[in-house]
Length: 167
Image 1 (spheres, rainbow, N blue to C red):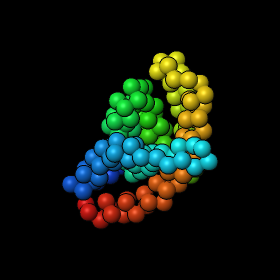
Image 2: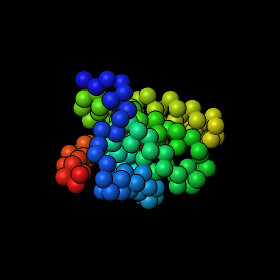
Image 3: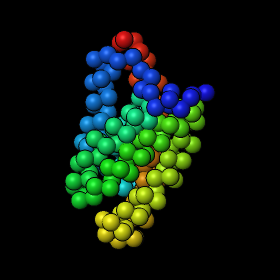
Image 4: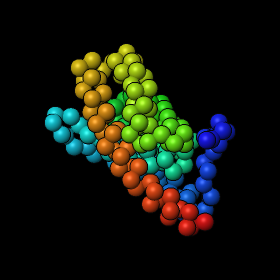
């Protein structure tokens, strides 16, 4: 079991490869955030994959870094700076729960549930979005988060091996 100070550590050997990987996990969500697909009338987003990957490899601080830097384009494009804080919260929480040895689905779902009041309140009351639109986002993000969380969980094991072999 992790002590609280261990949960917040990166717990990784730093090398050029691990630094570049974290930088990519922090920057690329901006690019991936430009793309989505519609399934059953809901927009499925892909940017969470990299935020979750950063959280699973580098811990809660990696999740914060990826959530913050990776949300800049979306926040600017939607004129909604609160997205940055919401995605920082999402990345941080997934990182904490994964460090506590929760399974990926439970970690992502719990982080989603904790993040949703922030998202709903800021989108409706501070960003002025219509309630119906925000409710659609809430449902779409549930599916996106779960799908991207599972994919990140599957690929993270391989990424950790690659980073470990480079140190």
